[in-house]
Length: 280
Image (tube, rainbow, N blue to C red):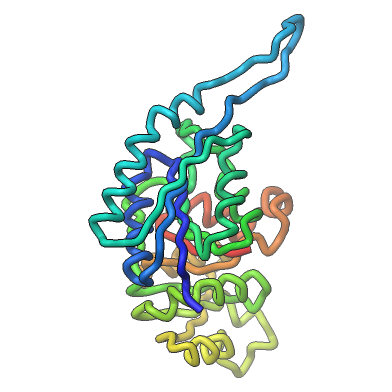
């Protein structure tokens, strides 16, 4: 079963060219329908403080997204038309100021989502934890683009992070439509020498055999971390081979545990330098 509908979230207006490029790349590679989603958030209402009787209302984000709506729609439709893709565009006037809520609701009816991380050094009007909210809530695979750089998505060389866990299995099989059309897929097992059960075996061989039966051009590789955590190791491996996409599970631990103790998902999202497909 392949992807039939891609949903691309367009509220990161400053990353619109990169979002459109990724969506059209996937649409072309898989022959899918592309849905553009643009959310006009509700005004932000803050409770009154001190002796003020009326609550404070902030309309800045809503005004910003209303002002950019026509431009976003025009660029989305032009990009899809240029590539000859089937598409539709949805502008949602939200009842809440949380953009992620609408993306999660709409995204549950898509096969895969395309989103961008939010630049922590800029105020873009999108929630700082937008990607985390979507990953945890949507129940679908999400292709996440970095908030800076070209963010070019390529299926020439794909790195799959594999540890045998639930989230790794979910993301790997969620990514199957992309893995089938990739020129090369590398299943990476980080620090296999630390797992006694893997001695005298090829790390990742079981999942590689399954992927090969699906027609995936796959190879396996153990990757010592040299003291790095798994997220760092995956990014370094992707750098080493020039991967155009990383596939990995998201939040094998709770978000709170990752926030307190660190974790692969949190590290990769904060240091992301290329597209990554994540599933939770």
